[in-house]
Length: 493
Image 1: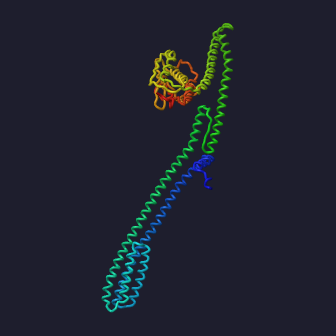
Image 2: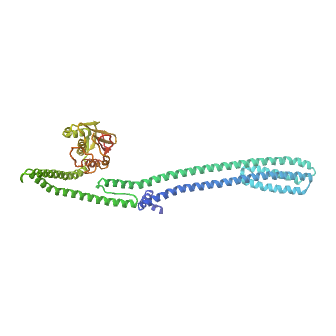
Image 3: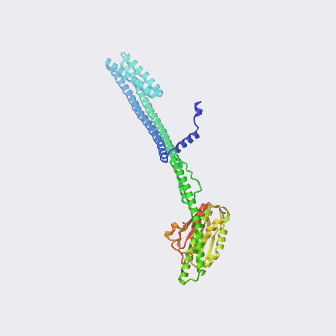
């Protein structure tokens, strides 16, 4: 009945996982190393014990082989001693020689008993026959009578048969040694296979454990890395949840607190910029209206110096008002860029529509715009992508010299879709490459005589592409600027 209360296998695994979650990252790593080391150490210890057992068996087999050889040789020596004593007794009739024969015979019988224990049933017939022949020899010696020459003749075939039996026993002993050696080799081979299986199994299980622990420990690290990337891209909408060791879970909670804090700061910043921009627009409009009234001579005619001062005031107030409006526009567009409404869109046709909508702009500089690539469709937000393409085209027109060509090319593979925008302008300076997509950043290589942009076009491009889970990059180019926008995993047809 008690066994019914034992936890099942999955429950044990869940309990083990729960206990690991209470450990820190370093403790989990140490536990993994100890577990793998214990597994490999256990396999090594098992192999050591198996080799030690085989070594003991080998030493015992060698000792038995030496003992068996000694016993067979001793039996042969006792047989020779018995024959010599028997012949000398029959010739000299000395009772001491008969006693010597009896001692050799008793020693031979003791050796026979030892051989019977070592050789077992394989030599029982030969040993029985040897005992019978030895008894027959003693019977001849015990009552030799007067015909001692006849006794010698009867004794000769008996001892000849005993010597033959000794050779038989030597052969059987050698076969027993060979059998034990073969058994030892078979046991050694079996232990070798067992050790090989244990080592391979331990290595495989250790690799599986290492992969499992590595995967379990690397997942929260990858999650933390992705969270930090999202925070760096000002994406604060998704809550942070990190699973794994206790210290990494605490780090996840801290990252979520940081996300909420950054989101609140971003909201405060946006609200502050919107409010201050609105607050600045009203007095700026009044300033511009006053400058316009002065320029029109409403307050009286102006001297040339006064007119120049009024013109400078008007230009700078107009520039300041544009910057305020650009600031408001950037925050509005950045907020709208995150709202993506995907629908099947023909990319090449969308690109041609954007080029046509900007015709007056690029024709004014006598530029040519080439649209290349295979036609296809993808799931994307057509309005947002039109804004991206328009910003790239306007940027290319602004930096392109007269009579130049701007190339817009569409390409795709099973995993992604990309659009390249290549112009023949001065390109991007090396020191500007790192900041080219930053808001309000303007490069050092500005075209002469061109209007000065606000620096938000490329930042809006990046915001929209990130909302599409895509990317905007500046690629190396020998002449001009080469921008590429890419939509990974876009379904194209």
